[in-house]
Length: 117
Image (cartoon, rainbow, N blue to C red):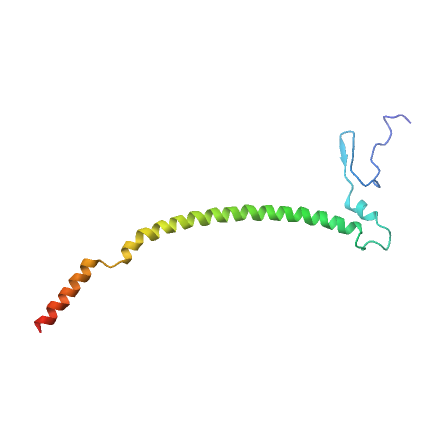
């Protein structure tokens, strides 16, 4: 058998990824779980927990990144909304105050009417 026809697929029992001839072999989850002895699959040091921790970390990182982006967008929207509402409130406060000349006119009218009786 010549060197060129020799099978170059990596040994699936190896614990790490192997690079060969432009291809990349990564150990599958099944291969990782198969390394545990029979009856010891759920021990605290079993491969399932390392696999779970890897998957959970990847998922948590992704969810955290998405939530962080959403939070940044909401904070930007809240800031802009607050600035616009503040501008309207400042402009509308003058509409909430009573006109002092109108109050004086009403008081004078009440005095004049009370003296006419």
